[in-house]
Amino acid sequence: MPADILNIFKTIFGLITKYRDPELVTLIIDLQTKVQELTSLNIILREQLTLKESIRYRAPFFYRNDEKDPLCPTCWQGEQKPFYLVTAMDQDQLIGWRCPKCAFYHENCTEITA
Ligand SMILES: [Zn+2]
Image 1 (cartoon, rainbow, N blue to C red):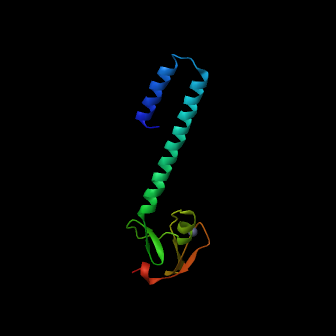
Image 2 (tube, rainbow, N blue to C red):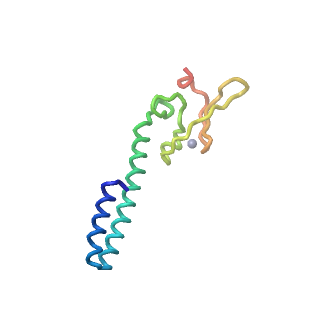
Image 3 (cartoon, protein in one colour):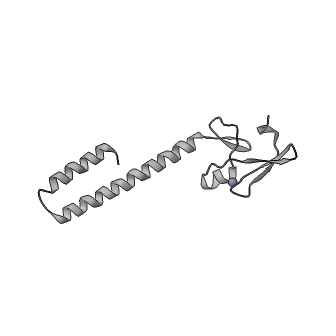
């Protein structure tokens, strides 16, 4: 919980102890719990937004920022999870890209190896 909100609750608890009203104390504790939950959710949503803003589409894959390793389009478009694709090799020849998380497979494409 941010320090300014925590200080507000400390001040409120300091004030309400004078009145010794159990219902008021319970309501303030419930409110503090809800604020904590919303603060945690806000952090998660900000992280998701930052991740989403970092992903770019360059056919046929998605990339994070300026990275050269492609992300799985199935995982990104489905669960919004940024799993990196791995190369599928035949001896020393790149024959495709596959996702270690799902069944996605893409045969070799020259765009990402150029
Ligand atoms: Zn995948």
